[in-house]
Image (cartoon, rainbow, N blue to C red; front, side, top):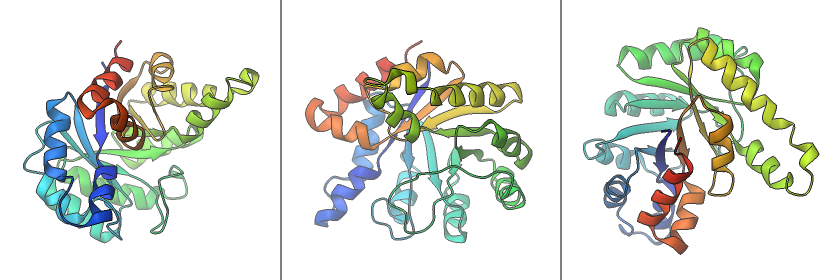
Length: 243
């Protein structure tokens, strides 16, 4: 079954909005695992507007499933990842002020940069995934840069999935995801996915991308938890990922 990694950034956003330590990020991570999450994802940004660098240090010894740290490989980010040594580092081409991740790597243009970063991480024993658009022409670049996995950026998929309810003939974009997934699998890259996946669109993606190893979901899962409760919500998402 495809693994569910819960991105806990939004819990940190809620904590930071009021100050103090409510909700307690450490307890949130423990509870997510207790409720069935297969991993915990965090995305510390330079302004620490949600997950703080110290949160990452505090989470490392208590996460018993897979710990995934994602972000732009700046010097500070790399230092943090090499210090905490998560199971996986997901490299995202975020400029410092971006609201949320909204694009994948150009693995051709940034090939030398990615090779250097990935080599450093893999020498530390960290699996590396890189954020990629559904673009078959960028897959070989991910492999040659040394990545173990790609994470498909599913924001455009989520938007098109919603639009397809009224304009099903326009759902051509999904072919790009299927072709990119097939190419990645053919050359030995494993496949993750993330961004705007939710209870409405996740099952379709899972069924049509059989290579899918892991999804990272945060915003939609936290929104659903407001109505359904965290434990029930995690189980609802895991059911969507069953084979």
